[in-house]
Length: 152
Image (tube, rainbow, N blue to C red; front, side, top):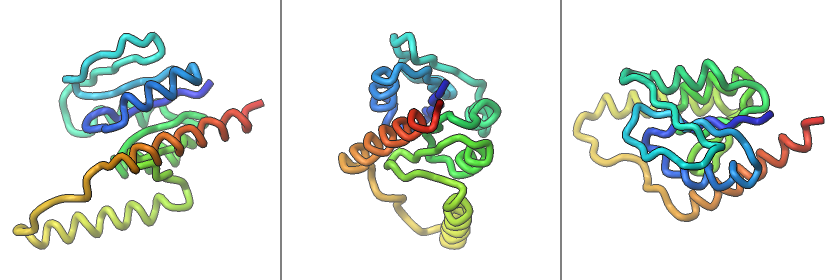
């Protein structure tokens, strides 16, 4: 059975994941360090992990496997989940796969080096848009449909 794992800290699509998971009747784990309003949905389990670096990521990485879906913007976590056979989606609908995760990791590392080299650099990435939300919903639906077709 497909399970959805959400790296929930700073995740802008939690409500969308819950809506799609409910429609497909899928167990969903919303993993965070706390501070989130728990869902009343019986298919959605809020998992609160202890404070600490990457504790939520480790919880997800230890459980996600083939046939599961992981929602995260954390590239190292995505790489672990892809390696374990899970399908991974970023919040903007971009799928992270075995074919592209190496390039995404390399780009992440390059950008971290560039930011470290210029301490006066201001600003961050672009903001999350309605188009990103729409792309995410479409991508999640396509992944779940593909899994259904692949499952005997």
